[in-house]
Image 1 (cartoon, rainbow, N blue to C red):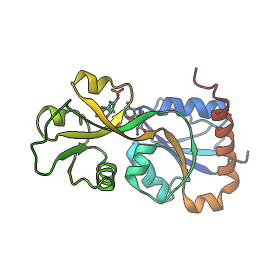
Image 2: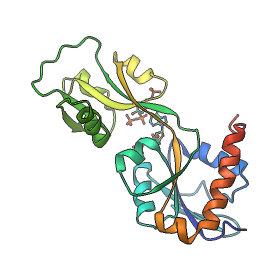
Image 3: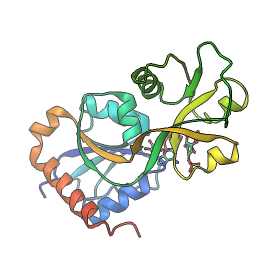
Image 4: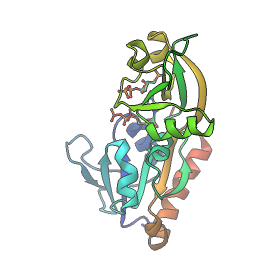
Amino acid sequence: MTIQGLTVALSKGRIMDETLKLMAAAGMPLPEELDSRKLILRSPGGEVDFILAKPVDVPTYVEYGVADVGIAGKDVLVEAGRDLYELLDLGIGKCKMSVAGLPEQQSHYSMPRVASKYPRIATEYFRSRGQQVEVIFLNGSVELAPLIGLAERIVDVVETGRTLRENGLVVQEDIMDISTRVVANRMSFRLKSTAIDEFVGRMRAVVEKGEVLR
Ligand SMILES: Nc1ncnc2c1ncn2[C@@H]1O[C@H](COP(=O)(O)OP(=O)(O)OP(=O)(O)O)[C@@H](O)[C@H]1O
Ligand SMILES: O=P(O)(O)OC[C@H]1O[C@H](OP(=O)(O)OP(=O)(O)O)[C@H](O)[C@@H]1O
């Protein structure tokens, strides 16, 4: 098994199931004891170790090399700004990063406020458009901000649009398309190239067939 010796950081939460389905279809060794509370799991043959990480922490584990490979959303990767190799788009966890707000709201702040769980993406987006804004970091339920007057606009991910709709908000601008990516540590990419190539090659074959998840 050429995949021997890899440590893979998986994002817990919403993209975990689909990631595991893709890995199963790719014939990858899968973690045992998934229904336990353990955070480091191993494949039955001991070839691969899996770290079950909070999504936002995956880039950190990979940059520091405690995981060779990581699976994380493009939103998390761009926000983290870590020095990683991005190797593959898995085509799952699809959504958009967008600017949203109340419809037809007049600005009443001298410096408009933007609330976001993604302060770096929000800051860079408005800076690139030459707009001065104050970005306010929130950890979640960002849609609250325009409703209670904390900020006029938000920058957040939109998937079905339901959360915006049910809170009377509308998309004003799209910033980027988001999906789940495979990233690698730069040193691991050289020292474990056989294993990483095998992992990515198998996953790519399944993604390109596009047959997996239904
Ligand atoms: N509707 C959606 N909302 C949020 N993220 C989505 C959505 N659809 C796909 N994604 C992708 O799934 C990834 C993981 O989302 P998830 O909600 O599990 O993590 P999280 O936002 O860090 O949540 P938590 O803070 O609860 O751990 C996101 O980084 C994004 O790439
Ligand atoms: O367009 P939709 O399909 O409604 O999905 C988008 C919503 O999903 C995410 O929230 P999540 O459930 O992760 O909670 P959070 O607000 O605490 O991040 C995101 O932050 C939006 O609020």
